[in-house]
Image 1 (cartoon, helix red, strand yellow):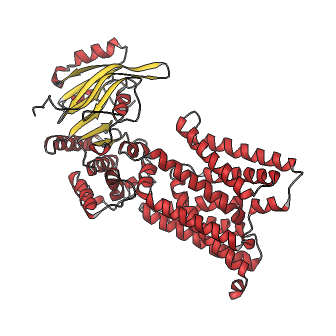
Image 2 (cartoon, one colour):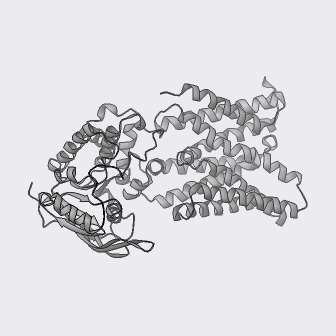
Image 3 (cartoon, one colour):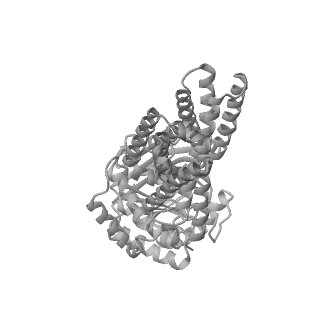
Length: 254
Length: 265
């Protein structure tokens, strides 16, 4: 799908971030355009999650500017335009008393606002989101009783329920078995192509991501960016990792 | 069987017990699921130190208890957010610190006096009409605020980070919850004592969690367990002449034991 590179929805300019004295990100600049399916890759500890948390307003950069839909992030109020699927499956409380429906309903809360309860319209959107990820039949099940792949689809449905324009996914494949991963990539492709959702996908599984996304950003303290992932041949990667003295893992897990 | 209802003090005790039995698990639900079960216990001990200060300075001890618990609850929450200290370590620090302070203050005042002992164990049979009014208003306040923030509280409890990203004012709501917990603890202590208030915030909720139901159903089950324990505990202790607070806690623990057997999966 051709991407309209003129419509920037998120702009990151010269962002640096330090944890205590350690420089995690250095002078990172990145534009996300409407309709992008951006893969953010890089070694563990290379600053991927930090970069995403800065874009989500969860962390403040030590230097640099972030603009969300043309607005400075400090003045940005329309957070319901942003969806977020955190690294959930790993650190998930399986005893939490919530049904699939209750979890997906959370995705509407930010949109509905304080002191207001969900309307019929909200419930329709929640059910629709569940159908989109093919989890409608599970809506009365307890979230902790589902498999990792099913839980992850429920979290996607939760972000869809907020009717966002961009969804950030942080290592969504962690804890999802290989069969379900395939299905999951299909779902993301569908969301990107059919619903024209912009996706920002963090992963350390470079080979898998390169085949799926339309843009790629390689984060390892600084950033290299390419709008054609196919250019990211393995030799380049090894060079990049090698430069920074990181070992290139072919397999998952931190 | 109708004996108990002939005594107006017993009826007032029953009424106060039911109100506290209703609000404690409501707040407890959000604390337990965030691994914050010990906060009730901690605030109860802080409250004790506050009461000791009140006795020493000869101010109304309820007032000093409220001030000390509300202030400490805010400081505990700050410490948790700052990540300088683990959440549960912050609780341990306040628990032991306030107990130490209470003991030192008591020794300054030359030993225990009867008034203070009453606060330690509570005296559900000496509830006055004014106490009922205070605890009733608190109950209404807790129910109203928790209903207003219900959906945000559920979201924050489940996934604080995502809730924050979706634009929910997590800090404000967290502070509200912890102040409500502090108020509930300090106002309930003169009636049910340090032991019972923390038990009622935690045990019915943990019991209800065994049934693995939706959030809202879990709250309903916790309320039923709490009310059953309070009412049957008051009756049992009245007729068998036992300590009321202790009986209520033991009954709720018995129900918890049964719930473990019912656990699905």
